[in-house]
Image (cartoon, rainbow, N blue to C red; front, top):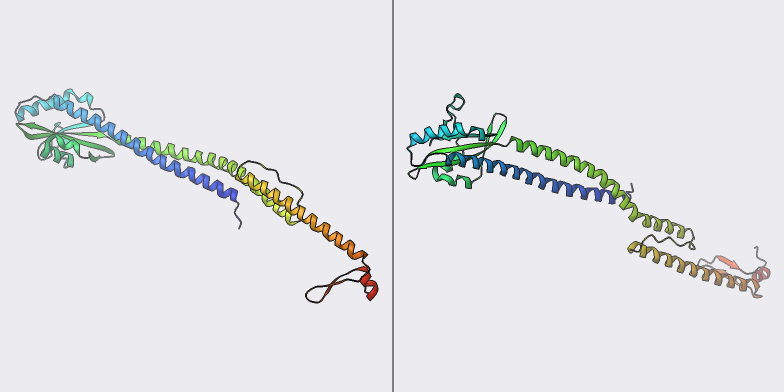
Length: 289
């Protein structure tokens, strides 16, 4: 089955658009997700720092926990889509004190890093925490007394909205790809038609030449390589037509000479078969015409 070059060009154009859209779409999704997660992390870090700044300095561990409970209550309005916990050295929740937090532990890398290296926990990747049907980003900050980490402020930032925005972005990109496919197919067809029209004309002219029609020059559609090819094709057809005219003219001259010669002339092919005899030879040999 013959495949038209026009449709090959259309498919190449469409595939090129799809590849560009998929690569750019992937980059957009990754960048949006990273930016959204970075925003959540920055807000969570600011909230943890705010809690830490409101804790008293040079206080005992018991007094620090009492003040921490008050701070969590006072700053609760600032904890939008965030959860702030106070953890002991066993990574167990000690604040806020409610039934839901009993025996809850957060044995994650951020907490361990904060317990061992204090504030340097922020230098490692945030924890990925799942609670119920929601996902959170976890950050930890150690609280020190006399150079020793006594407990950890652990914050969870809701990143479910990040996933929702990512899904929405992917849906928009998929719709854009579908629309781009339609536009690319239309533009690709127009582009392919523009390229293949001169080629189709050349093919038709070649068929005409095969039938002996050499006196009709082709229309030149452009001044590019295809236009130059068309011009050279017309020159070749004209040159071939002139050559055939000359050959025909010479043949006619020879036939006239043969017809009026008084000497008989017989022409044989390589197999010995007579292929031509002038009138004089017909009369001499009484050959059937």
